[in-house]
Amino acid sequence: TSITPNAVAAVSEARQWDRLMQMARLGAFRGGDGSEGVNRACLTPLDREARRLLIGWGQAIGLTPSIDALGNLFLRSEGTVPGLAPVLAGSHMDSQPAGGRFDGIWGVLAALEAVQALHEAGVSLARPIEVVAWTNEEGGRFAPGCMGSMAYAGHSAADSWDAVTDSHGVSFGEALREHLAKEADLPRRPLGGAPHAYVEAHIEQGPQLEAAGLDIGIVTGIQGSRWFLVELLGASAHAGTAPVSMRRDAVQDMVRAITALNALMADPTDVLRFTVAKIEVEPNSSNSVAERVRFTIDFRHPDAAVLTARGDAIEATIRGAVRHCDVTVTERFHALPVEFHPAVTGAVERAAAAQGLKAVRMPSGAFHDAQFMVPLCPSGMIFIPSYRGISHNPAEYSSPEQLVRGARVLAQVLAELARD
Ligand code: HGY
Ligand code: MN
Ligand code: MN
Ligand code: MN
Image (cartoon, rainbow, N blue to C red):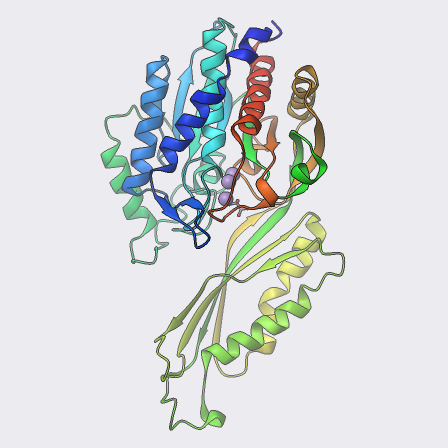
């Protein structure tokens, strides 16, 4: 059955926008410029409140909730043919500490909206569809990101991150155990699965679609990402008495290391992404020389060869630049570039064309849970425009019209992938 036009029309702009705004109140805060952002870290009471809101909306249309050992949340709509592998559609509900109202959460709500519209239009599909919300995609509270999808896909062991702590010293393992205890009323399912396909709707988080006046991004793939944690251990000293020549100053060595890394990561074509953005200094006092510094590295590139060559040179570059401190470099995340499957990119292209939307094929600069679904099943993504390409920032914005166009394309893609 090709999706009937009334199924596309049943995708409601108002209902989706209203749900997004209800979610935006969970962790709402105002950015410096007055914009309305969200700070909803994974496995917090706010995250649980948002999940309960989603579960309520899902159960109201007959979806059955379940969670796995990483807290990944699934809302299942049954198909007409028993025993067929499901089509998964979703994204993440956790946000950056200074995040926007659309990153991640829209993809989850678009999947719910699409399933609800298919139900309302009476479109019966052979395969089940499962709306999924992955645990800890952002990696803000606990690094790295994509823990839920990496564990589900078998990319990493489920207990890989138990010892990782947040800024309050709470470990991921503790936070997860507490979360699962509070969600004990929900049916538990084994970790992992063999879906028929996976589709993730997500805001572009870049300027391309808006600049070109386009409605839909047919995402072709995702670039590679590597995250490192660097720890420099020197010695604290009195800022007034300790001669500079005798210091083991961790901040000065960090500056040397970053300067050397900037040279390693130089790229006149501006394709390479190199970011140092989380820095912890101890004792963090203006008149005590820094004893210890921890800083993060986020390095990305679409070419696996460059990702390997430059990424593998990071540790030696740091060790060569540092003068006085002991150096520890730990790799925390390593996602290779992926290409999405033509069964999904084709379905996105067909749906956008059928709905008269202007679409373009484009890669994703941001990583997504979809990256880890690629080895499991045909996977792909749908982008919609982001206001001036802003994201990971409270000023992140997409309009109700842009959001509903994305959800309508998703509904048609799901109908095509789940029909047999
Ligand atoms: O960092 C990323 O690419 C994702 O948006 N969390
Ligand atoms: Mn996201
Ligand atoms: Mn994000
Ligand atoms: Mn994502």
